[in-house]
Image (cartoon, rainbow, N blue to C red; front, side, top):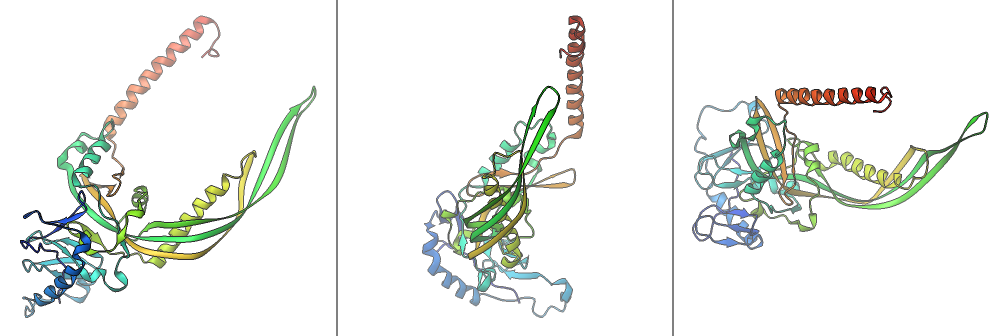
Length: 370
């Protein structure tokens, strides 16, 4: 049975609405009506009831059926606007109808224990993502020429990525081994003295809303690189903010994300503590004990622009923070151009080195004058 879709349609003209990052309003591209996301909360109830009344399965009597193993993890959604079916996996939360291009939200993904606590609205648009990509390419001498072509951008999409936000009061006690070394000499001997110390450190720190992405589809390193997000601008979850964007439900649970959050707490705490151990010749950590209390976790959707570029059969993914505009992603290297640069710089270095050796020989000091 197809799942229900929640679709925001303009009360004035019936067209599909979308969230506009510039005005922070939900707007109609046809009649220019605009609404605040909060004003559409009551509209949700109407949409849900309307969706129930318009559901149908025109292929109920079709003898061709999916095999059980073929539909595992697959959901079928029906567009309320045109009746077309949208396919998605268990984590797909919003998309566009492939037939009428209306924005559709898989409302089942935001009910019960799947419903987010917070959403951080987009503040930068698609044009900003394109500009950031071009700026990212500027000045990269070893970049393949084909990569600079607009045509190689395979896809740009705004997506709300699921994140778990962890807060905790962390206390720690650490033991370091440290040493100081001094040297002196007399007319006969050179002396070295090493003194060893045990350093004990203890402290407390409060961590608030540390993000850990909850999607297996997203690279952890890529998502971590997009930080920081200003979570003070996050608002209580409202589906209106999703209109016009893609979104995913988490497929990494909060419990499975705890170890990553704890590692972030401990790595940060460790760096803070190590800054108190200056003045020694060497310092090494012998042991560390951590304790957490007042733990809290929240489920949030954070804005990310994703750009996919295909070059020589390989897909490169870039990401931009949809709130701050921070852009990250690794670029390929043109090996032919890299070899040319190595030859040029290698030859230049050889010429300079040869000239220095000749000058030293002319001055009569061998190679010691260089």
